[in-house]
Length: 340
Figure 1 (cartoon, rainbow, N blue to C red):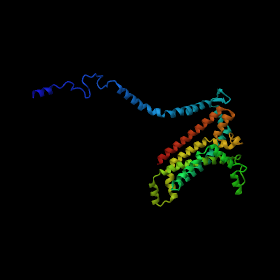
Figure 2: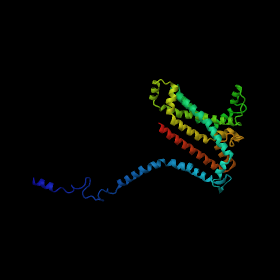
Figure 3: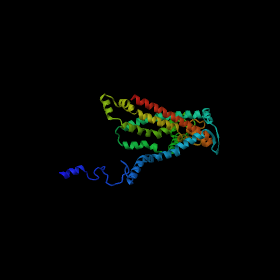
Figure 4: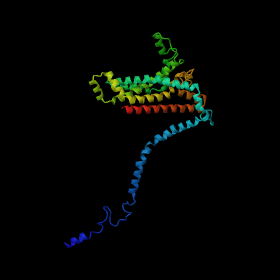
């Protein structure tokens, strides 16, 4: 008994040490681990966890900075100078004179008006047709996958090939469109020289290339609509047209707004179709600038005339227009969310 009491009264050496601490081991301070390979590994792990995400996304920002941000800022600097293509090293400060010349130029306002009209003529029928095609593809059809691939074929076709074909279709002599008009008793139209004819011809190229692409976007949005909504509408006695009006269209509002904004941006930057459609006078937008867009006007001022300062001002004017479009999109999106 006495020996057991002595053992309880006098604990064994090292029994009062902290758990995991070996007796006689060197201490580097209370709660501080001894330096070693494990501490360096933990620091390297923490650094890797913090830095790896930035390293993964850095290629995008590097490429965007090199090919997007720096040229954009350099174009803004050029727009404040008088710079000629033949003498890039000799530039003089002009301030806002290039922008004032644009506002007082009839060619600029004509290009802006043509951009708006061609964009309106091409965007509205394009999106309406895309919604109709997507509504048809949303139902079970034979070979639906084949039809979806067919819808993407015009989008995959190059601008040069598509424009060449449409140029032949709208040819004054021997074009299929004028042949069809003559067949129904309508006089042939000089599509390249007339104002509305040329704008309609250019718009038809845009419609043909982008309708299928937007149709697939609408189709994906339609397939995400819950089937319960259609079942409830069918129980209430709604036919397919009423279901399309009161179920499909309200559910597609965010997607419709997205396609409208994207189509508007594409129309503002329209360049390849009118340039190739016009042939020799493509950069001028026709003999009387009847279908010259802002993109063609910028190209004509910068690479044909050689006034890079004014061309840079046009480029920044297009950029400001796109910012206004983005602001309108943001406003409509907020109102749409509040209404829902």
